[in-house]
Image (cartoon, rainbow, N blue to C red; front, side, top):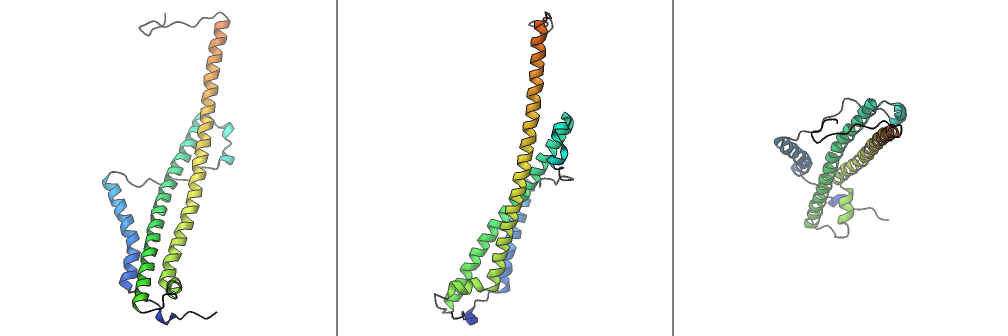
Length: 199
Protein backbone atom coordinates (compact mmCIF):
# COMPACT_ATOMS: atom_id res chain seq x y z
CA UNK A 1 0.00 0.00 0.00
CA UNK A 2 1.51 3.39 -0.96
CA UNK A 3 2.35 5.79 1.87
CA UNK A 4 0.45 9.02 2.18
CA UNK A 5 2.14 12.09 0.86
CA UNK A 6 2.48 14.29 3.95
CA UNK A 7 4.15 17.12 2.04
CA UNK A 8 0.76 18.79 1.74
CA UNK A 9 -0.11 18.35 5.44
CA UNK A 10 -1.98 21.30 6.84
CA UNK A 11 -0.18 23.46 9.39
CA UNK A 12 -2.33 25.60 11.63
CA UNK A 13 -0.99 28.73 13.25
CA UNK A 14 -0.11 28.62 16.94
CA UNK A 15 -2.81 31.22 17.58
CA UNK A 16 -5.47 28.93 16.10
CA UNK A 17 -4.30 25.93 18.13
CA UNK A 18 -3.93 27.95 21.34
CA UNK A 19 -7.35 29.51 20.75
CA UNK A 20 -8.99 26.10 20.52
CA UNK A 21 -7.18 24.92 23.66
CA UNK A 22 -8.25 28.04 25.57
CA UNK A 23 -11.93 27.51 24.72
CA UNK A 24 -12.30 24.70 27.25
CA UNK A 25 -10.74 26.68 30.10
CA UNK A 26 -12.70 29.84 29.32
CA UNK A 27 -16.04 28.00 29.21
CA UNK A 28 -15.39 26.12 32.46
CA UNK A 29 -14.13 29.30 34.18
CA UNK A 30 -17.20 31.18 32.94
CA UNK A 31 -19.50 28.49 34.30
CA UNK A 32 -17.76 28.59 37.70
CA UNK A 33 -18.10 32.38 37.81
CA UNK A 34 -21.81 32.16 36.91
CA UNK A 35 -22.41 29.48 39.57
CA UNK A 36 -20.66 31.59 42.22
CA UNK A 37 -22.75 34.61 41.20
CA UNK A 38 -25.86 32.48 41.76
CA UNK A 39 -24.58 31.49 45.20
CA UNK A 40 -23.81 27.92 44.13
CA UNK A 41 -20.17 27.27 45.05
CA UNK A 42 -18.44 24.05 44.08
CA UNK A 43 -19.60 21.09 46.19
CA UNK A 44 -17.02 20.73 48.98
CA UNK A 45 -14.69 17.78 49.00
CA UNK A 46 -15.34 15.60 52.08
CA UNK A 47 -12.39 15.28 54.48
CA UNK A 48 -12.05 11.56 53.82
CA UNK A 49 -13.53 8.76 51.79
CA UNK A 50 -16.14 6.67 53.60
CA UNK A 51 -14.93 3.34 54.94
CA UNK A 52 -15.85 0.34 52.76
CA UNK A 53 -19.14 -1.27 53.70
CA UNK A 54 -17.61 -4.73 53.98
CA UNK A 55 -15.26 -3.35 56.67
CA UNK A 56 -18.01 -1.43 58.46
CA UNK A 57 -19.99 -4.46 59.68
CA UNK A 58 -23.27 -2.67 59.02
CA UNK A 59 -25.40 -5.17 60.96
CA UNK A 60 -23.46 -4.50 64.16
CA UNK A 61 -23.50 -0.70 63.90
CA UNK A 62 -25.56 1.34 66.30
CA UNK A 63 -28.27 3.54 64.78
CA UNK A 64 -26.22 6.77 65.21
CA UNK A 65 -23.13 5.13 63.63
CA UNK A 66 -25.24 3.76 60.78
CA UNK A 67 -26.73 7.22 60.21
CA UNK A 68 -23.23 8.77 60.20
CA UNK A 69 -21.99 6.22 57.67
CA UNK A 70 -25.01 6.94 55.45
CA UNK A 71 -24.28 10.68 55.59
CA UNK A 72 -20.64 10.03 54.63
CA UNK A 73 -21.67 7.98 51.58
CA UNK A 74 -24.25 10.52 50.44
CA UNK A 75 -21.77 13.41 50.83
CA UNK A 76 -19.05 11.58 48.93
CA UNK A 77 -21.43 10.51 46.16
CA UNK A 78 -22.50 14.14 45.69
CA UNK A 79 -18.89 15.31 45.57
CA UNK A 80 -17.98 12.68 42.98
CA UNK A 81 -21.11 13.60 40.99
CA UNK A 82 -19.89 17.22 40.82
CA UNK A 83 -16.52 16.06 39.52
CA UNK A 84 -18.30 13.87 36.98
CA UNK A 85 -20.34 16.85 35.74
CA UNK A 86 -17.13 18.84 35.16
CA UNK A 87 -15.53 15.96 33.27
CA UNK A 88 -18.67 15.51 31.16
CA UNK A 89 -18.64 19.22 30.28
CA UNK A 90 -14.91 19.12 29.48
CA UNK A 91 -15.41 16.04 27.32
CA UNK A 92 -18.23 17.64 25.32
CA UNK A 93 -16.18 20.80 24.78
CA UNK A 94 -13.16 18.72 23.70
CA UNK A 95 -15.33 16.85 21.17
CA UNK A 96 -16.59 20.18 19.79
CA UNK A 97 -12.99 21.46 19.58
CA UNK A 98 -11.94 18.32 17.69
CA UNK A 99 -14.77 18.85 15.20
CA UNK A 100 -13.72 22.49 14.69
CA UNK A 101 -10.11 21.45 14.21
CA UNK A 102 -11.20 18.78 11.73
CA UNK A 103 -13.13 21.37 9.71
CA UNK A 104 -10.24 23.87 9.75
CA UNK A 105 -7.70 21.28 8.62
CA UNK A 106 -9.97 19.99 5.85
CA UNK A 107 -10.64 23.52 4.67
CA UNK A 108 -6.94 24.36 4.62
CA UNK A 109 -6.06 21.17 2.74
CA UNK A 110 -8.86 21.70 0.24
CA UNK A 111 -7.71 25.30 -0.35
CA UNK A 112 -4.15 24.04 -0.94
CA UNK A 113 -5.44 21.83 -3.76
CA UNK A 114 -4.94 18.50 -1.98
CA UNK A 115 -6.74 15.59 -3.63
CA UNK A 116 -10.14 15.11 -1.98
CA UNK A 117 -9.49 11.40 -1.38
CA UNK A 118 -6.32 12.14 0.63
CA UNK A 119 -7.80 14.83 2.90
CA UNK A 120 -9.42 12.59 5.60
CA UNK A 121 -6.23 10.54 6.07
CA UNK A 122 -4.05 13.68 6.17
CA UNK A 123 -6.30 15.19 8.83
CA UNK A 124 -6.15 12.03 10.98
CA UNK A 125 -2.33 11.97 10.70
CA UNK A 126 -1.90 15.63 11.60
CA UNK A 127 0.03 15.93 14.91
CA UNK A 128 -2.29 18.67 16.23
CA UNK A 129 -5.36 16.58 15.38
CA UNK A 130 -3.80 13.58 17.15
CA UNK A 131 -3.12 15.73 20.22
CA UNK A 132 -6.74 16.94 20.36
CA UNK A 133 -8.05 13.43 19.71
CA UNK A 134 -5.93 12.09 22.57
CA UNK A 135 -7.43 14.76 24.87
CA UNK A 136 -10.94 13.62 23.89
CA UNK A 137 -10.04 9.98 24.60
CA UNK A 138 -8.45 10.88 27.94
CA UNK A 139 -11.51 12.86 29.07
CA UNK A 140 -13.82 10.05 27.93
CA UNK A 141 -11.83 7.50 29.94
CA UNK A 142 -11.76 9.75 33.01
CA UNK A 143 -15.49 10.46 32.93
CA UNK A 144 -16.24 6.74 32.48
CA UNK A 145 -14.12 5.82 35.51
CA UNK A 146 -15.49 8.65 37.68
CA UNK A 147 -19.04 7.69 36.62
CA UNK A 148 -18.38 4.13 37.82
CA UNK A 149 -17.19 5.52 41.18
CA UNK A 150 -20.24 7.76 41.47
CA UNK A 151 -22.62 4.87 40.76
CA UNK A 152 -20.86 2.70 43.35
CA UNK A 153 -21.07 5.35 46.11
CA UNK A 154 -24.66 6.16 45.18
CA UNK A 155 -25.69 2.48 45.29
CA UNK A 156 -23.95 1.98 48.61
CA UNK A 157 -25.73 5.03 50.04
CA UNK A 158 -29.03 3.60 48.76
CA UNK A 159 -28.19 0.26 50.42
CA UNK A 160 -27.52 1.99 53.74
CA UNK A 161 -30.80 3.88 53.37
CA UNK A 162 -32.64 0.56 52.98
CA UNK A 163 -30.99 -0.79 56.15
CA UNK A 164 -32.08 2.33 58.04
CA UNK A 165 -35.64 1.98 56.69
CA UNK A 166 -35.76 -1.71 57.73
CA UNK A 167 -34.58 -0.82 61.23
CA UNK A 168 -37.24 1.86 61.46
CA UNK A 169 -39.92 -0.61 60.32
CA UNK A 170 -38.75 -3.18 62.89
CA UNK A 171 -38.88 -0.52 65.61
CA UNK A 172 -42.43 0.49 64.60
CA UNK A 173 -43.46 -3.17 64.56
CA UNK A 174 -42.05 -3.66 68.05
CA UNK A 175 -43.99 -0.62 69.27
CA UNK A 176 -47.21 -1.93 67.75
CA UNK A 177 -46.55 -5.38 69.21
CA UNK A 178 -45.96 -3.90 72.66
CA UNK A 179 -49.18 -1.87 72.38
CA UNK A 180 -51.31 -4.83 71.32
CA UNK A 181 -49.70 -7.07 73.94
CA UNK A 182 -50.41 -4.53 76.68
CA UNK A 183 -54.10 -4.41 75.74
CA UNK A 184 -54.37 -8.22 75.83
CA UNK A 185 -53.05 -8.32 79.38
CA UNK A 186 -55.82 -5.97 80.52
CA UNK A 187 -53.68 -2.85 80.62
CA UNK A 188 -55.66 -0.34 78.61
CA UNK A 189 -53.68 2.46 77.07
CA UNK A 190 -54.75 5.89 78.31
CA UNK A 191 -57.07 7.80 76.00
CA UNK A 192 -56.42 11.31 74.82
CA UNK A 193 -59.03 14.03 75.12
CA UNK A 194 -59.87 16.72 72.57
CA UNK A 195 -57.46 19.06 74.35
CA UNK A 196 -54.59 16.61 73.72
CA UNK A 197 -54.22 15.63 77.39
CA UNK A 198 -54.48 12.06 78.72
CA UNK A 199 -57.88 11.12 80.10
